[in-house]
Amino acid sequence: RKNLVGPVNPRVRVTLYDGGLTSPTVHLTDVVQRDGFNPVWNEHEGVTFKNIKDPSSAVVLFSVWDFDELVAEDFIAAAAIPLSCMREGYRSVPLFDPNHMRCGAHAFTSLFIRINTA
Image (cartoon, rainbow, N blue to C red):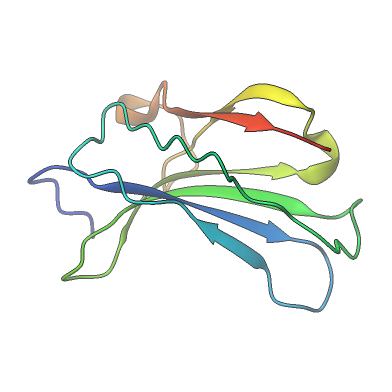
């Protein structure tokens, strides 16, 4: 259960489910300390997905977690997008709360990402 006291230390987990029998590919961003309102990751390397077995059924899951070294991470919000729907360029990915809703604190939450298909 999410502890609502104290600052949020967000981190994004980007997971590719490619429809194959292999384990999903996971990329973790760095943790942004004490900035849950407007975190900036500035990852220049990004994540590269290779050897996708079935691109037509592949799904990318963006999930945001509150990182804490002492206890388990707390889920904040997420969005899943079929790989076939992702287009090159800058995109805003709307996030949904644990109840799959976009209201209250999650009404306008999103991730601003850049997709490069090269």
